[in-house]
Image (tube, rainbow, N blue to C red; front, side, top):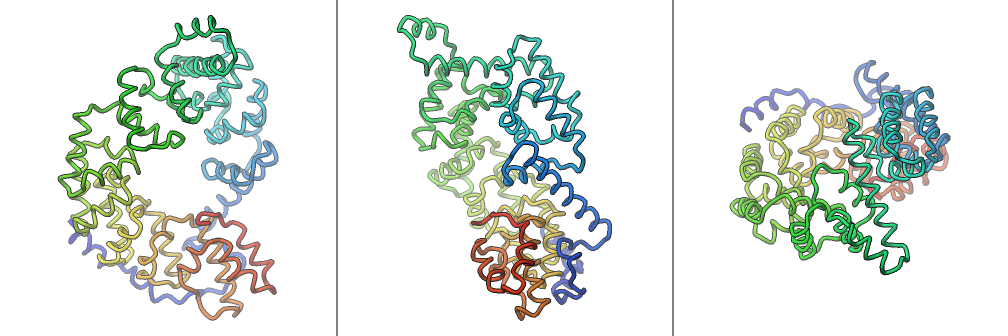
Length: 459
């Protein structure tokens, strides 16, 4: 398989990119935030940037969100007109939701801002009101568990709403100072579900994770013996109750029998991992035991066929266990993408060893980033392969701002050449600013403006 992919990669003309001279086109402000080769791509990028900027300003002004949260929401849903989002906020406020509660809902479901509120929200809220939810209950429960609004069908919405209401009431009963007789009465009525949630709450599992457990189709908190056995195993393995991994591990142990878990562990052992390494992988990513023995072996074999040695595959699984769930098709497509761009077999192996997450990156994203880094900035493919973590950074929010600062400095003759890729893209923000912005006081104001879109991804 790898030889066929490699032949395709060798026919690629992408190696010519390494011969490109940085900044062959006159540098101007209009080129700062654009790097694609066609006018259509340029316009699309600019339009998207404007929509995100408008969305961020709208959310800050309308709901008082922090810039960071507003930017996060704009990455999932952006718009350039007030009409639809205004209607969404008006609808939620008409049901009594405060700005803080609306923020929780929108942060969970940004798409509500761009969907028709009559179809996506009003019917669900109206259904809950018809089924007896008071205004105060409705706003409290929906804002604490916005995922209720993501359910389709009145039956499911009502079902999950009742679950959450029951747990919140149980929490109130537990925290209130009541008489021994009333406590006894409450206890006698307590279901497995409420008792188990109370146990998890006392262990330190956050409320947000408890409520998510309740609206999941899987019900690891509904049993008794199985629940107790699962929690005991998780505690013995040392999971932190405050971590989402604790809940993920609960799902796995609750759903799988001891025999099935042993089979999964043995599958990894056959591929060269020790028992301790298998459990270390599980602690890093609990869902590693959910895949069938066939799937586990298939992933190992696929990674070997595309050029990794057995030891390199084991190292990859230990560093990035999520790769076990990656389909054969996606792995092969990843190899094809890198080879078509001109990376050699050895360079691809280097990329995967140094940053295994690259195997899961979208092909279009890898192509755009590689083109910019090689053709526009002038770094070689070998240099990119030596620092593959940069391929996981946001092109628009992280790579463009930093690289465009460098482009200005080179164009104005303030530095002689483009610095090393690691210095530009993997330095902490404060170090980057000190090296390339603060020391050039004559243009520091302009450089700060260019740098504004940067995100603190590696502080």
